[in-house]
Image (cartoon, rainbow, N blue to C red; front, side, top):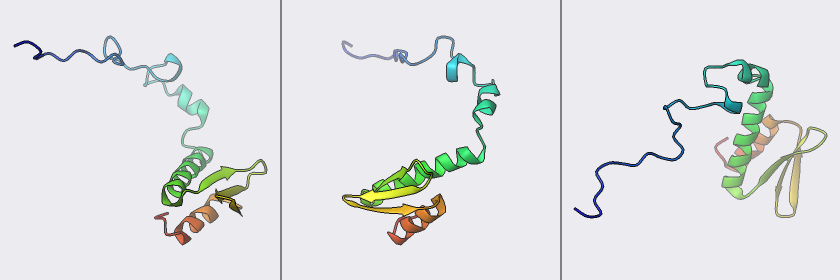
Length: 101
């Protein structure tokens, strides 16, 4: 039947041979890159929490979360801003706004 295809063409993003490559060409079983980057560290957890709160605030009310040069945090919306000492204070502010922080 013309126009009918029974066989799916391979996706262009599939790696020939079926083995995906990791960061910088290393395979996924090489843990040296993840250890060098500090995955699982407190800094990594803080980055994840920052990203989570930034997304939550953006979706809940159009707020933007920024980290300032001195390490403090600022939440802005329109021409208003509030400064916070740490991520826990930002999470509390998000809860006050009614966001499920």
